Image (cartoon, rainbow, N blue to C red; front, side, top):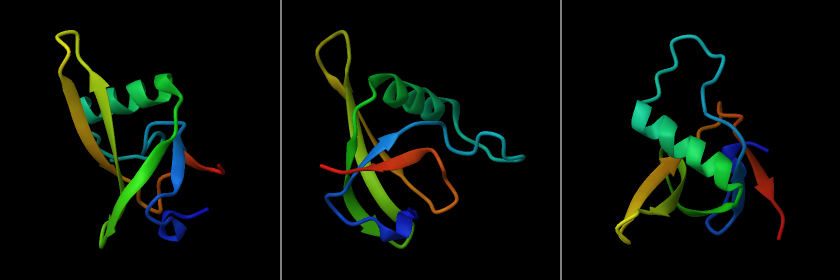
Length: 87
């Protein structure tokens, strides 16, 4: 499945870090850390919005002090780090 076929409300499971094995693919270290946490969590995320850059989803992680860190991440067609989840 390509990311352009996703719709708002669809669920995807993150199974890898985007760009792995691709030369010159830069992923900020903080973003890499978020992907590692998503992979370890092994829970689907829901597509929240779609814009000209593709589908976006949000994830949040509880910090030790009880607050949350929230992240918005994008899926592009070239990424093969996710799979669609049927409900």
